[in-house]
Image (cartoon, rainbow, N blue to C red; front, side, top):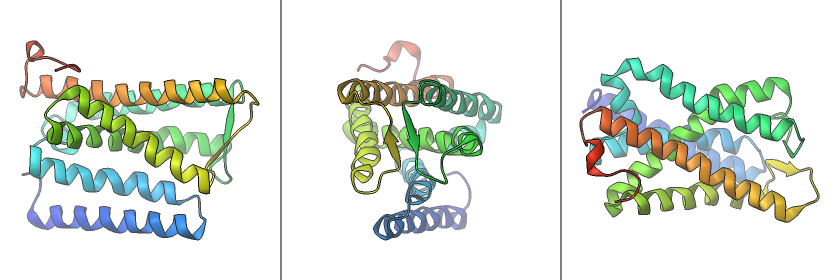
Length: 206
C-alpha cells in the first residue's frame, strides 16, 4: 500500500469533495467545473486502482521517482502539441478566463497533465474490470468523450471558430483517439518497466 491509511482516506475524501464541487459548479454555470473534475477524478481513481489492482500512476512513481519527469514531459508535451493545433490555425478557443497566453501555459503545465493522469487511471480501472487491454482502452476513450463533450453541450468550455463542422468532428475524434493512446502507451511502458509484465506478454491488443 502506498502511504498510510490516513493518507489514503484523505486522498479519497479530497477526490470526492472535488468531484462534488465540479458537479455543483456545473449546475451553477461556472466553467471552473472542469478544473475541479480533472483534479478530483485522478485523485479518487488512483487510490481505488492502487487498492484494487495494485497499479496506479502515483503507486508506480512512488518507487521509480526517476520516471516522474519523463512522464510529466510526455503529458505536458502532448498538451503543447494540442495547443499548437488549436492556436496556430485558430480552430477553437476556450471560454474566459481559460483563454489567452497565460491560460495556455496553465493548460500545458497543469490541466493537460491532470487530464492524461485521469485517462491513465480510467484505463487501469476499465482494464482491471474487463481483463483486456483493448476493451479497457475503448472504455477509457468512451469515458474521455463522455465527460469532455456532454457537459460542453450545456456549458461551453470551448467554442469552435471554423465553419466546417465535419472537419472539426473528425479533428476532435482523431484528437481523442490520440490522447487516449498516449495515456495507454504510458501505462504499457510502466507495467513492463515495473516487471508486472514482460513485452512478450502482449500490449494494447490482448
